[in-house]
Image 1 (cartoon, rainbow over the protein chains, first blue to last red):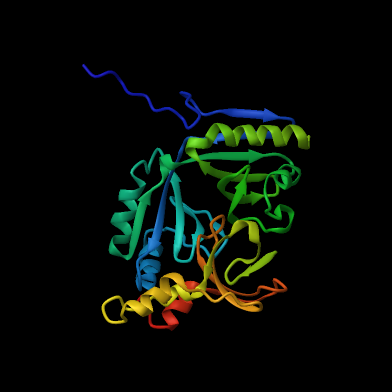
Image 2: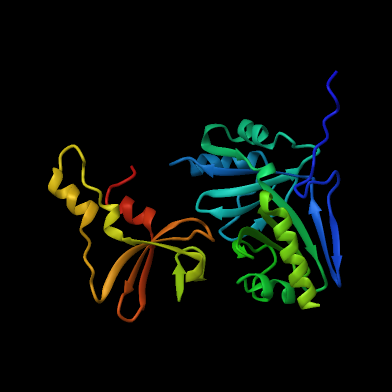
Length: 187
Length: 94
């Protein structure tokens, strides 16, 4: 009889990590389903219509837009990364394919990334040590790709003290280590 | 050096990867152009001291290809376009 299989987090544990360094809390998010949506050539108008009907936000460049059940941020011209709750949207790529049909190319991304939520009263001292994003200068809802300790990451500013960070899953430990080192230096 | 990305605004040149002369967009028709034109396309590059149009890739950004007009003497950047728009304006990628 097959044994019960148990999923592991990006850090190789049974349950997601929560790390506290001074005022900073890093929470590994294990509960987000993730997929990319790229408009097919000449299909942008049809994609926008289908996405609206399916409640998939398609925000402007460098922006994040929340929503239910889907949240999304812009990554490239006519391309977005879409988030949803893992519990209800484990098969996010199939759900998006059903909703958007042949207007977009959709790629499952859930297990390609590690997601960390950063929380502190002010994240500026941490992020100015780690990347070139002008964190105090950008508005809430700003999303960008950036280099963080040699790792290409996506950074979403949810508030002055709230950031969601997506990094390459195979480098999850290195990314967490970089956050810990920078936090120890900042506070 | 700062590159003014047409969509994202000013971005550090460290986020970009340099490819080279933007004439790479103008690949000759392999069936009709003949070997001379293809030899030129593959091997011959101008090396101007002055204004130069070149391809840059925004690898640590939105991963778009850009055509950057840069003065190779002063490093002044006078124009930045999406390579997609440049190619389409020439009738490519239809």
